[in-house]
Image (cartoon, rainbow, N blue to C red):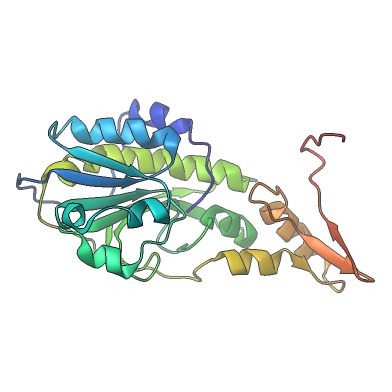
Length: 257
């Protein structure tokens, strides 16, 4: 789950895929329905990659939980769900109704499960980041892992830059897995890799943006570096004498009113 520079998707599909860890034994079946849970920008490219391997596919694009809940049970029984960089948490009732399972393309490595992992990687000063494809289960970012790609974190990389790198790797992995996702009725094979680390959330993000008056300069700098962009609508905030003061990045242009 993240807010990446999605324009990199189309470019990524034109780049030769690099090696990544995945195993599969494809057997063509009669898979006819894909529910594609993604943003509007990448929807067309993802659907095209799937249809290139299975022209008869009926693609059902959805962008929200309400869209998902509007899909009839008959379609769910004949469908596979693919989530690509989505903040939507799919309920167990829907997951259990799918005839061909659900897979999620997560913009972080297995050791960074949860919401907007790039921001927390910057906060932790992580030296390794990546991207992960996994089976969707009721618990967020906890299902068996199908594929993963790790890469060194560039020095002084911002959260937005890390998101962009993870997004490109996810596009490559989608391109490699598209045939299996579009044609193979059996579940994709998984890897002996486990999720680990703290699972990030909106609540944790908000808590780290609440700045104590006793905070050290080093800790304040870490939080501003990771969460100070304000791109998700929440910025580091300090409360003094009943008044709240929000950090504003001096590099971000503001509009006078």
